[in-house]
Image 1: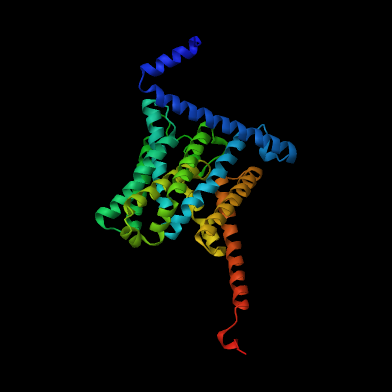
Image 2: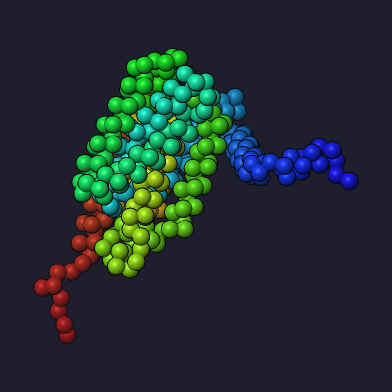
Length: 342
């Protein structure tokens, strides 16, 4: 005999076709909450060893901000490396502005219809639609990518500003946290959304890395080889949209695109291959995030701006290191005229 509560659950699951997906979603949510609690425990142990105030157990919002930041430090350069090599560095900026429109849509729906939906979820939907529109405009009108990006960027930001100006239900209240990011507003729900986005992005790139690499460096050859190039282009922009929405929590709309580009640009100065560039970009991004969050916490500054400034400082250092490496390699390489044979 099953216990009464278990038996009733089984009956409900058999009676309702939607029960199984809901049960799966609940299981995933529970698993992510366990991951979040494990992260809290790890940082509490680290605080006991180091005593750093930035990970004080009294400030659990910093625990969530650090988790989100570390995830951003992986997924932003992971996608940004492909974008930079495809000369699509500005697409992050376009999608960030449309994600802002998605946030405004979520706030508007909550204010008018009291849906209670997370603005980050509506931002995901709107950003993905905008990403597909960028590709669609380029394909249908034969316009260059920068033209389609400019059209989508201006349309998205215009929609966001119109919805904000309506000020339905106090829509403009707290909008600065989406424009500039805010460490203290990273809730447990937002951290879980970030973990889901992290899993999707890393998983998809891991499964399609070779195809994305082929399309990135030789699109014509990829078409000849039979790869659905248009599909992979759409996949890339959709992944970019997910990164933008995830990073928007602490970077803000205005600065989110920097994490897609600056660490990757720094990595290209000191790397010799695509794989090496990808790994170095992740290391540089993580360094910028950790230093930026720490400096922002102790200095009372906006985290997004500090992270970008640190990332740019790291980029300058990599340029110097790259120049030194090139000079040293040139000195070690003998001129043809100086080579003699016995």
